[in-house]
Length: 386
Ligand code: MTE
Image 1 (cartoon, rainbow, N blue to C red):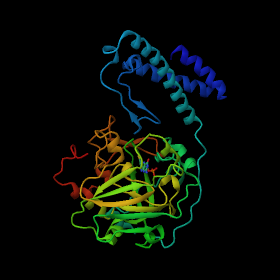
Image 2 (cartoon, rainbow, N blue to C red):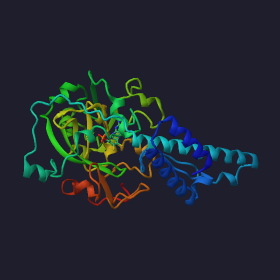
Image 3 (tube, rainbow, N blue to C red):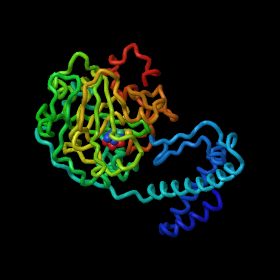
Image 4 (cartoon, rainbow, N blue to C red):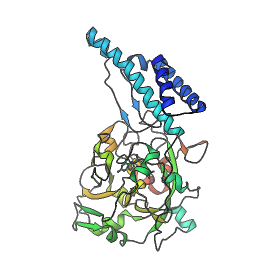
């Protein structure tokens, strides 16, 4: 660790009133990463550094240009840049301190009981397992499902989403469904809830960052809604949009993503019985941090396809833009099917860490739903259509 970094940490540690164990943990952490960055040639030049925020690997990535600035800039600018680098090292240390501090002192978990959903249909064993409606793996705890979230409209810190989203008002709520359809309609949430009986679906949930869960969702098939609006034969894709309201979703005041969050599916994927609009989990209504009042769940795709707090659904002729594909197209494709053999990201997708377990487990093709959805991709090159 650099001398400036050390001085800074001593100071920061006193400010934060950390005990000796925590300070030691920070120093070890810092030293480790500093050495790794130097040995990889990243720190002295900073010319092709990717800054990962949060737990590595994290989806939030800023990329820098390829050409070394020392090759093209004059001496004074170069020297200024060295100063900048020192500043950046210090700033990196600050970020890392914040990171480990948050790990050691996570915000208190928000565990609030939700109103129960009446008339819930629970999947009966054999047939449900065959259809993929229920996996026999242990469900992740309610506390983890509702306190380890990605919802950038509220926070980029997984463990802060629940507290930041607390109090998010979801009544009244409407979803506008239109585009290439015979019967466009704006549905009030209560209308949507009457379209089909609420079903429990116990699905695997796999994030491209490498973690996974098993979640007992409550919802209804998206196809029940799409049938209501009667798609035209020219409709080939379905586009989804999250609420855009920076007053209610404060992180939309930042430029961390292009807002609103958008997603899309091919029409046959959207019509598949495994694709649901979720309105609850663990038998209760959906907590804000998980996408209240209504979000998409497509269990064979990476979690980022599961767009939250949906206000608009459009039937369209061409592949619609999707948030993470706009962000880093070479990493996040339109299809985003869980695939242990294709690692478009810089990290492998071969294994995953199931939240609540200590060891990693192999990732399954289509997240274990190959029997149900494999036919949708027959003849397609999954390396190209990632
Ligand atoms: N939807 C919106 N609107 N905003 C988001 O930031 N994050 C996505 C997805 N849906 C996200 C979103 C990502 S990256 C993941 S992994 C899942 O939500 C996480 O869902 P969970 O928090 O319920 O586990």
